[in-house]
Image (cartoon, rainbow, N blue to C red; front, top):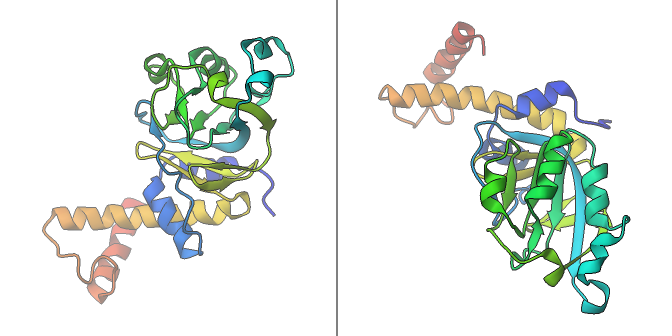
Length: 240
């Protein structure tokens, strides 16, 4: 059983789209893995790939959530920023509520310097213009200036969460591209990475054919013998 994301699977997932991964997951019965209403703070020319490290917020209660809580060295948000392993993705359950920020540029900078693969929230980020300029993929619902303490109370690290209507368990594999973010159960990741790579090769072939004037019937999917033969020849020629 897969216990961690391999370098081989990571490399494959860096080269495929969340759309293709979504179809690969649908083939094995998983229909709700694409995180809803979450988009890049700014598009990056590379995929975000890493295992999930989770942070969960609940609704803030004023007597327990004053500004002074940030002085507590055990505050879950601060601890998470310092403990998330390099190469992982910080994924935050903000209850789909972007009225207050899940984090800001200082915490995201710290995670970037620590080698974190990316940051995802179904809420919002403050300092979004600065975060968008960083070399770390970041995804949120929309910019949100108010401090998280006004709406959210950090309550738990690295437990199961919901993010954008998707269940996320610690260690799940998170992939983000310019469209959004998808969640792959860890035990499926090798098979999904392989299938997504195969699908990408075929779709690249189909795209070439359609650009050259081919009709899609019989080609996409490849139900005709000619399309199947042409694809086999294309793969041999391209080394795909």
